[in-house]
Length: 405
Image 1 (cartoon, rainbow, N blue to C red):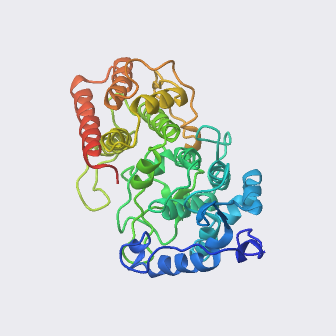
Image 2 (cartoon, rainbow, N blue to C red):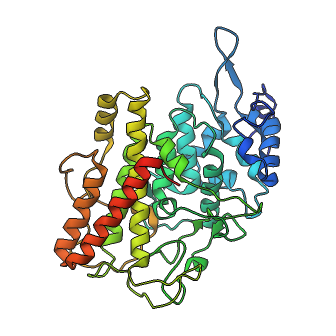
């Protein structure tokens, strides 16, 4: 048995080529990041073989079988977490890479792979976490590893909804972009390290659960790596079910977020001071940044939808029918301010407030509907509402044009 739950027999099957050894292969981004490059190189030699090839009628590779040992992880969350946990020093990254195939999987392999990822990271159902349970450090590290591996590699067909549920289960973390130098020296951060500073600010967001661990996408061991979730987030959205899961999660997050703001549209507990890079902040700075992040994710999703049509890869009518079929409904903030800080995994699974009104696929209008309903109930000053609408508009349009970080 090899590290990560793959048998020696399975690890000794047919090797698959990892791409040309030049500068344009799918792993070329790893140059300059030796700790990852070495791990992936080893995985291709010793681990990529965990999914042996099935040969098609023409004698060439057609699909890979997902090993029985990997399939079993979908039914054993604790074992799945252990198998996909790269550890604080990333020493198990090679083993994780061996368990996460790319390309085409035979039969229901993609769907099962998505279930394995969900089990390992503590997500289940429609993007929810097991009720009341906070994410552990091992689960958060597992999510970090999955994002690193699939942000540029090909996600096996059928696995997209599972990976979307994973991102939705960490919607606070996966909505916020990370930048170089923002992270710690490990791929996950504890709840204690995410506690707000004296100004009320935390780089992991507002209204955090006191028990949740967080994947740290600012983790920088190699001197230049920042893990941008946007490419994976947007890439998954090419699948309409994954699109619906992520779109639901962002709209649910907006309702969750708004209902915890003050009647002035600010984050409670703010104290005058300077931001993380020394810049002056105001009582609206934190909320403005978070609203911008949400709008950018929704704009990025909509960009994927329209780009697919423009490129001739998407049948818009069929795509939209599937999205509507998988969409849960509309979300509205509570009428009075909420002060609870539940684990973020439950955000995507919050109850819907009713059916969607208007055009579901007009993302900007759906965001405005949520904001306006909250502002009317809470009697938010007109000037502040106007400013918040503009922030949502700007973030949405920017991502719709260029995509997400």
